[in-house]
Length: 243
Length: 122
Image (cartoon, rainbow over all chains, first blue to last red):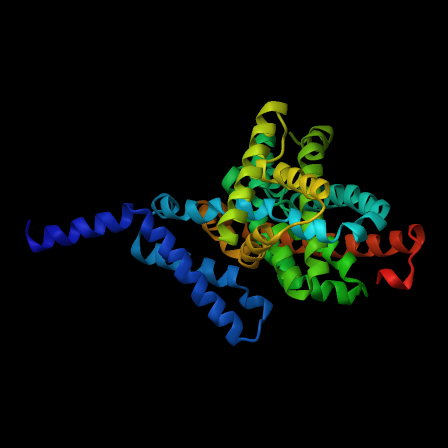
């Protein structure tokens, strides 16, 4: 092999190997965490946003395709499963508090599924978004893997739903605390539950930074919202004649 | 060791969840069913134990990195996003603010009227 052939063989390997996607994601995250700490935890510099910007920029500059990237990215994506299951542990620790609030929790949960889907579809329709976008927006408040499942069932664009759900998560994490203080809700249990219902896992990550109580209630909101939305949303959309 | 054992337990509960999803044709994902199963197991057992505590603290502390790979996939919808970015942005912000505010207030009011609270709980 000539020197140039060797170089292009190496480049092919870099594009195809899962090592690239994994190390790119990990390095982007480490860099993002460093910035986040340096900025004294400014919400706009949340590690998720920075990591995404870094990864997308690197892919665009190098021309590595999303499929090639995901060959490695899927290993990190995989961790979302066990991490979701592990929410059972903070939930267990908060069980005595949750039992006390059972009735408000059920009322708020059911209302939130309707408020979330109807406000999203309503605003998107008003703004002239296409039907495909409206449907893909409907499950935006549930955790990404569940949002993908629901989107598939109701005929949305699956990967668009995943991205919009993640964006909703990060958005809630960034503006959540401000909205709560604006409406004057200070209790960590209520703030946490509202955060989880709206912004699932990424909101829960922010909630845990505030307090364990807020994190556990956010995890509860996320788990309950996923279940309830998965059952109600397909029915609601066909009732509204959207699908 | 604690982490490895705890991590293995989490994977097993996810696996059980995935099995139930297929068996009962549930519309939710395996991990969400896994939460319910693990919570039930913890209630029966009565304690969490160090392995699961270690694994959950580690994983939940870095939850945000796990959303990165799938979200980068938004790239693939560049054209659609360019065409409808304004509608999508306003919908996301509007709907998120409405949900955050309404659910927080609803929890707050419902608790005030429906739950008797003693100082001890706060």
